[in-house]
Image (cartoon, rainbow, N blue to C red; front, side, top):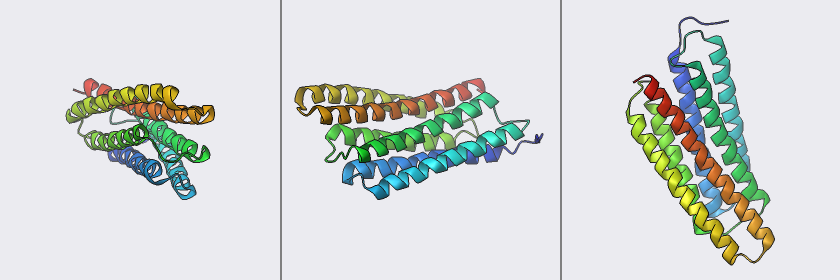
Length: 204
């Protein structure tokens, strides 16, 4: 049944929950690459991924039941799905790190995990300005784009170094795949930034 009077704060609360869930996942990822991919940490990441799915489901359900929304329905759907994609990829990174029995993370992996954490922090900050459609979001999106560019540079250099230095082909494949998944995760932060920026432009 449609609600004709929007409860906008509920959408923003769900966005905030999704973003903070990602931040928690980014924190677990940092712990994994710095201290080890334990089964406990993998389980924590999986719990966060399930929580992200629940938040996404609740948002889509609310969207389908609300006639008047705080901004375009397709943007609400794109934003919550974009946030869910990030959490899914964080879970994928954690699973690979654990299943491949990776340890003693090289410096580029730790740098990428730090970029993911910083991107998560900036995403939480951007979402906090969304209800008021504050143009501060534009400046945060610029920072997220800059972090994505830094990540691209690190990944290119790291993969090139793998082919130069890594003698074990199995190890090379494992680390290369991890780098690519880390890069994809950071790319999804940029996708969310683009969605947020589009929302601000539409309502400027």
